Every structure is written in structure tokens, then in C-alpha cells.
Image (tube, rainbow, N blue to C red; front, top):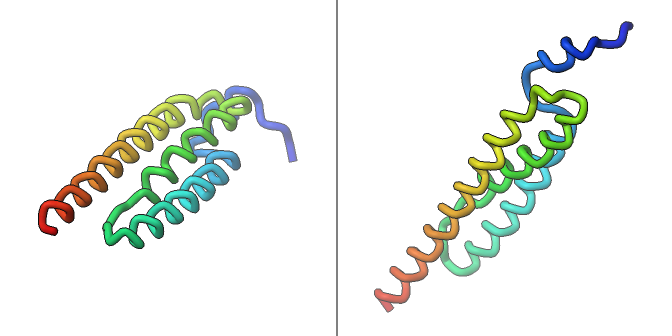
Length: 102
């Protein structure tokens, strides 16, 4: 087996080990948040955005070996943040609707 050149490493498509780990950790945290909001009678999805944010953070670490991951890392972090903000807005709207009907 041979060592990959710098050009070969930067041309590799996809994520990396840290991206996968970050996605798993973020998804697990999002799942716990969703379980908590379910106890409040809300229907939310924090798992997807949290996994995306975690993946982006992991890809930043992977970028040390593969700078080609930087655009994907930035995109994933951005998507994760937008998703988490959407989660918060949705939860607040659900709480407001429940309070108004009570």
C-alpha cells in the first residue's frame, strides 16, 4: 500500500472520520432534545439539524488532512445552525398555540 499524495488527498470526495463522529454525536444530542420536547407535548426535529452541525464541526477537524472538506464543513455548519433556529421557532410557535388554546 502506498501513501497518497497531497493532491490525491484533497480530491477525495466525502467526509472523514471526524465528520462521521460529529454527526453521530450531534444526532444523539438532538435526539435527547426531541425526547425532552415530546414530554412537553411538542413535535420537533432537532436530530437532523444537530447531526448536520456536528458533521460540519467534524469536517473542520478533518480538513487538517483534507482541505477539500472545508467547503462542505462550512455548508454543513450553516445548514445545522439554520435548522436549529428553525427548530426553536417551531417549538415557540407550538408552545404559543398550545397556550392560546388553553
